[in-house]
Image (cartoon, rainbow, N blue to C red; front, side, top):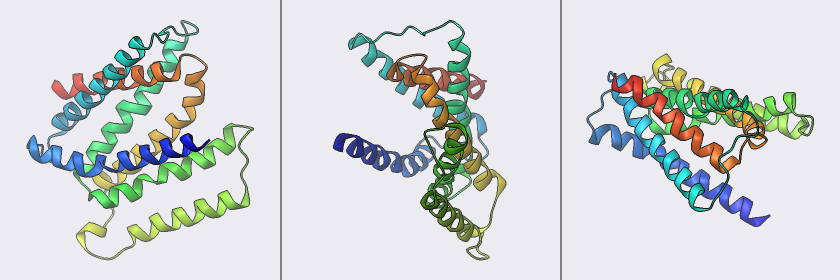
Length: 208
């Protein structure tokens, strides 16, 4: 459907704004690369508020908050950790030690990882020649970025590039878990739970 493509493209454009806005946020709140707690608190408040807003909208639309089974709470907690807590902790740490454009390109590693993992874990997804070629070109592009010269901005760093790569991998695994989430709770409510709970798990250690 056309609306699926429009929504996906809109989400991609809006997500692109995250890189400069987070950089501006670090500047406005005087959060330096060494302030690990400050970065976790900044990220945690942002996503916890986002999750609460989504849950309030779900409540207004009278969407059921009930999990299919009690045991599904463990799955939801793991999803929140990967989709929000670990994902954005790595993202904020890495972005504070890396250039925004460089981080954005490295973050696309998660897209190619999802393609490969989906073909391994889901029968409905098959690894075709076109997918292999697309992923290969993408990986070569990321490799070319890291071999881009001797300048300081082109060098690989674990605190910058390494954290962005871990962020991409966490995002990739969480993306695969989204199918399982939809089988356990309404996906809109599950997203709200993930952001609110994952954000809270960032706020507490950041505040401490």
